[in-house]
Length: 82
Image (cartoon, rainbow, N blue to C red; front, top):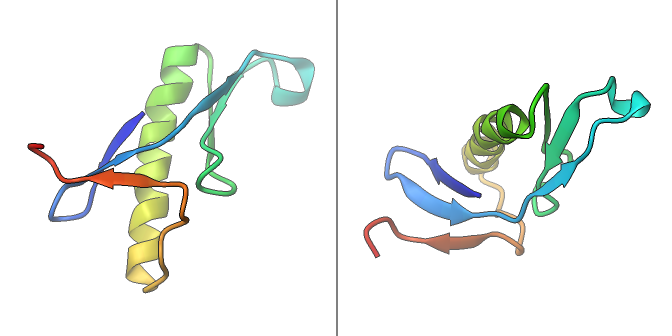
């Protein structure tokens, strides 16, 4: 999954885990990225869960930056256009 975050539009490559619908998740797909603890999103389809996770992960990254915290080591960053 690729995330563009911030005014400088840095591109982040994040691993994503997709969980099949089950009773514990309200019969929704759940997508999460293990490199951002707690970063999860749900959707009626796998595509909608992944789309929502992209938005949530961008907000996580922006929150880290706004608080001056370093990003977790597992995130691989590359500059756009490379």
